[in-house]
Length: 266
Length: 266
Image 1 (cartoon, chains in turn cyan, green):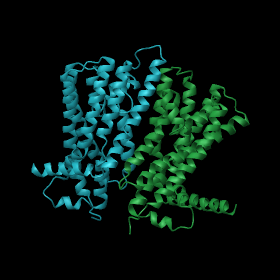
Image 2: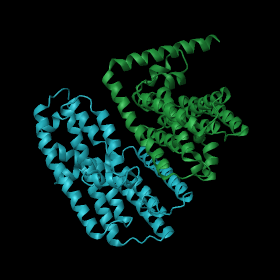
Image 3: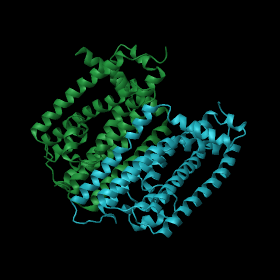
């Protein structure tokens, strides 16, 4: 356990090594939020309807702000790191060490994301306070606690999904393009760009069977008041379920991959 | 005149060498087209929302907004073709000391740094989709398609491209002052995406800043507004003036950065 705590600390320190780059990177998350809030304000102000895609303006603004912040918190490059280790033989040193490489990578990335997660949490708290004051939205303590819990599981789920995608590197030489495409597709299907409701009920009901909406869309639904307590509870159970499924699948596919692994370089 | 001919010849060689380099790895070339195709879908989602809601926003019909988005997509293709990969590599050239080799070349360093790489793959989806949307919407809205209108549209695209070049290059100059500047690329990507929607969705103070202090709105708004006959002579003159002024300022800033540049390799 001590070794993983150390790995977490190393990941945390690495993230803060280049502080200017870290701070500038945080600013970049506000641009998509800025574009989306302006767009939705313009649409709502010029529309005769007060509800569009089942959202009022305050709900939509809360959604886009939270989606932008959560997307940033969940953005991870772990699949590229694993691809690099597999391709360049960096995996070799982990084979001889008494440490599980996958757990190492997941813990290191959680450590790396922790600093960003702390700062994004502050912005989320500020955003929710503003929306509570401006739009008279009442957040209960239980909703906030469940929201934070769901976000934590979202980050873990995203990292584990990324690790699963990275195992492609055992069999395909250049996988960075697949990673980039999947990243964008997953972001859209998670509700990271727009609420999934814009795609219509048919597509939303299909997406319910996929894990993606449990990364961004589901946590936000907790605080926009669109879910009953039972549905929130079931949603968190589903998140844990997907984490376990992908975790087990990762172990299986990783074992297969290690048999195919050719130690080139390193 | 001799100098201009020299640079035209050199740029011709850059075009040829870039094509040869990309055709060496044809799978990479196709993958880049695939990646950009996926990003194109995210841009088209904005058009889908505008069309689906059917709202007339501040006097601009959905067709006009989609015409604007088509112009944005077209300009994104031009930006990716000419400048994007040059700007993306500035940070690593400085960090690895490879800039030193470029300094020794007997041509303008700024020219080498910002024009050397030409990408043929990634612009393809954007340019094709942009031209199709612009042409279709041009007919659908019933805009006049005379020589002056089309020429003016093309001239505004050139002005927008030059303004975009100056702004994006200016942001990359951060790389001279920080060791790691990955966030500079995130900022340029985010700044470019601000033009996903027409500038009139933003409030008037942001529009003023976006057209003067940080004239990012000129990049894609001016061509669309010219074609829609919503750009007056003063705005066009101001745009041309800002284009020239920005270029001179950025060139001065680049010279200042080079004066304090110390090689990473020595």
